[in-house]
Length: 328
Length: 283
Image 1 (tube, each protein chain N blue to C red):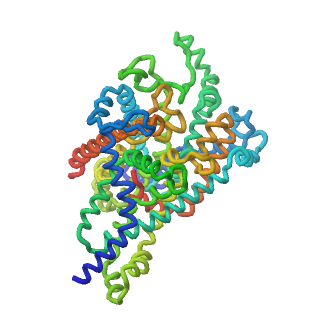
Image 2 (cartoon, each protein chain N blue to C red):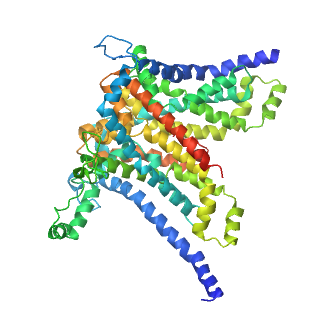
Image 3 (spheres, each protein chain N blue to C red):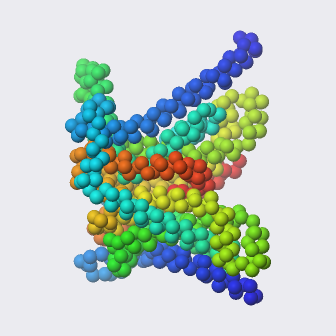
């Protein structure tokens, strides 16, 4: 009994610094922000403080911007499957016995490791419509092949390089001001530019390393047995590698959804200010502008809880669907 | 084709063809990764009027672009602030996480599992949910626009605690029981027995915490107002807003921003790769 009390005292001592910080800066704020979401709190007190019950959530349901930015957030996640498939392919290539594996792995991981404001400024410069490297090359190719003349001869309206971060066009033809599509919006624009950059950053990053670990954990007997049965490379992948990697894929998909739904803040702040015409504003960036530029703390808290709830529901759905996938 | 001939050609494909095809595919990908970085370095060395030219190499190598960055903004100060804040956060987070992890993994006390589950439950909460009240709190405490406001809220990590607890659970309990038999205090057991065995876990946590805070953007962006407190990412953002047309200088600053990261990666590659594979990166 004496030893027990001794351990409790020690536990309090060891835990206290972390627990205090945890309560003040994490657990407390979670509850506090839930409470705030039912208030009209404005940081600069232009309006008197009131509890407004579900007022923020009613306003949010009617907030057209909220729906448009939700669509943006989902649109920016469309690169996810491409990036994940690319990571898997790179991991399979890297898991062979080849020379220079470490060099390749280092190069592939470089964008993930250095990602941040510096890389975004780099891509912003690359995407510059006048002198960015992308359009310099695209225009050079268009000139060299005389594409303009050919298209005009065929009755087309002419071709020009995309305006990238300055354009509201997108590959799904989504409209700017309202939820819907319009033919005139079809093309390459800011959102697609951010997707391309995202795939470039992520493809050789953490997911590839996770797949590499997953592949090295597949028992070699399984692969050898399949090969003895006469299975080709594709059959081995389809029947051994892919099912064996299901837990890894599942983890990657869940984490990508969680990251994607709350993502897009840094790109928007550094590269586009959420524009043009709000087309690169994601929910995370919208919350930031509401809280820290307009100081509508109550409304921003409500938005952040809606985002949290969305992430929670989708993660639960993933678990439900993924559970079946994992059962073989 | 006879069986033997097919086996022969299969042998050629396996020995020469397939590795060559793989190298070709990997090489193309590697080039895709390298080209933007190369463009960044070359552009940082060009005179401004050559930035938009197709010609990849500068006609004059303007190494003084790098010095001009320091003339236009206090870039050294940004470096110092980033290193200072990231180092403090890393130190405090590793220490407090390790201590809490020890309490969760090694000590028996009532309510332990409930408190631990509370920690786990917060891992899924998006950062932005927590940041709004934290901002209001800093306003109240008058810690806005200060080193303390940058360091203290970032110094306690439920995730780090979780990671180190999992790590400590893999260390045989017989070791610290033996230490206790010899009359070691819990602190001695923690510091002299468990911590040295946790070295790999600590190094991994330290690297990722340092990285995350060296490049941290959201929190410094809302907390800092004064120029002398700007960290690298905030300083870069400011530099871009004010001097944005000088692409060559922006690229020089970007190069200087990522060079320490590349050095860190090459030095600690083994730890980083294993850390990711152990799940040391929060999604």
